[in-house]
Length: 264
Image (spheres, rainbow, N blue to C red):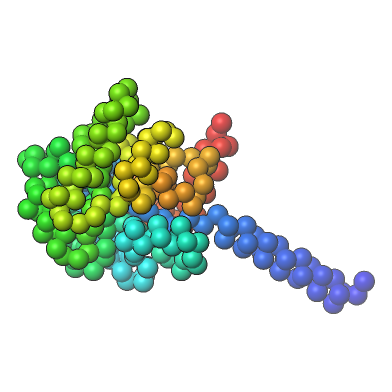
């Protein structure tokens, strides 16, 4: 074989390999749904449920300046359900529990950069000193960039509750209360601590929700299951924007599930 033909052959193998790798990687893409809790000026690096105000703003600025396609969670769920083509750099922002600092710090940043987000409320905790009030929730609702979902009545993981009736009450009544208070249909549900089973998942469907988010339910759940949407917990460790970029790439979920599998 001539040197030229050999080079062409090697180049062909490289091209085929890159195309195959590209197709493989493309099949592992999952729309990143980032999950925040508290946005606290005094957040410490070891706190997995809080980021500093400075970190949160840098991350929101990062998404805006790099032209991420930030969509409301419900819009992402519709795209997934209808198997529509999702443009690169699509992302959704969620915040759990309803901390007051979401109103004081996160909300102004989201307005500043015009980024939509979904907040999941523990309804029995509304009005506590460290939680949102109904007036604050309504102000956020009226902004047009914040939608709300249920995080049940109380903080106890549903999977820990033995009474089937109580589990049902937590799911159904929280939806009813939010709809009465906000005058809006509540379509999104967040499993407390991201934990659920098939019975809980079915009750969420029966209650009339259109989607539900977990944390990292694992590889056994399909990436396109809109009642087990996989999220990425954002902590102060993602104050490093390279880390944040990796986590919001759309491939981080595949990496962490693959890593978990290798550890077993």
